[in-house]
Length: 310
Image (cartoon, rainbow, N blue to C red; front, side, top):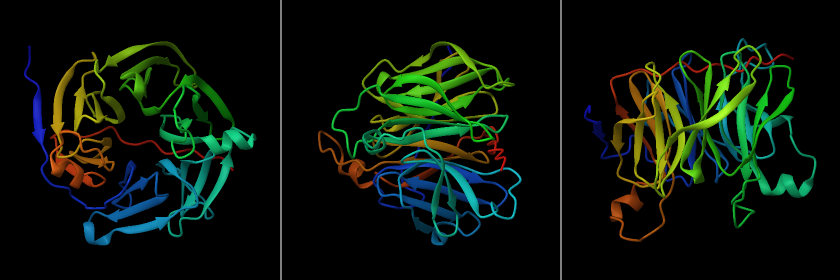
């Protein structure tokens, strides 16, 4: 059996002292890197040519779980990105942080209050997928009320998977005929048959099961079709082969790892605050809620952009 490749990260690349950092995204055209703090309702933007000193912080009017670029934006869209926000899909001005909704799945005020959008991704045809879950700010016990939605370029909203608890990492294999979806509390990454032309999914099965109490969170997919999954509560990112086997591991100095994304051959990794004191080194608490990076020697699959038709 081949040995598992291992990397160790000792220090943050960028100290943010955030609460729940998520949604890392590399905008190659601008050489900008952005990420969010879901809990604090912030959007962070970094000029990678300048580095950490260039960090800008935008306050948004709602929590944001995922962001994506708009393909071929017109004059009105050139300063906007599309996001999964508290109440649904929205556009956000990347200069001011102003947010405006374009698709909401619920009218019920109680459901709007207790649900929020989380992780997501854009597929090869420019459709934006994102999962909604119970909002821990307003719900004491999370239940499987979550839904995976698909927003088509014409803004038609489709309910694709029901009865999820914390829908997280979403992505596709190299052939674009399999979609992966994480439901964190189950410890599982599921696979579906994916019809690229229609966006329909079927034949749900387990692709990977962590087999313990730790939770797979967001993930990135590399050019070899492997999944790099953040392990929340586990202090690591693991590399999972297309066959569902762990073949790599990145160890970080804090416990709550939320999501990686590729910038060239480097993985940039977001984390969440760790305020639990049970048998943890003080460094684990000190290093939570920051941004990390590590060179893993392989590139990621390019991000697709949302094909907004307006």
